[in-house]
Length: 78
Image (cartoon, rainbow, N blue to C red; front, side):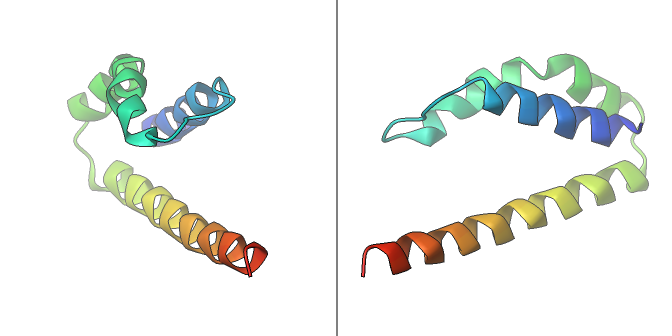
């Protein structure tokens, strides 16, 4: 498993620990980031383009997921 995969897995695990993010999910970013320091340090220590490419793909997946869920929510409120 790559360092990027470990980061993504750990991030998913950290997020699954919350039942809700209330009205301000952005307020959780620093808390979650601080829990990922070990994984972040490992990625920083091996500054490989492949690791960053994997992170970019995961970020894009998250954007697409957010867009789809926003549309679903919009349809549900119609």
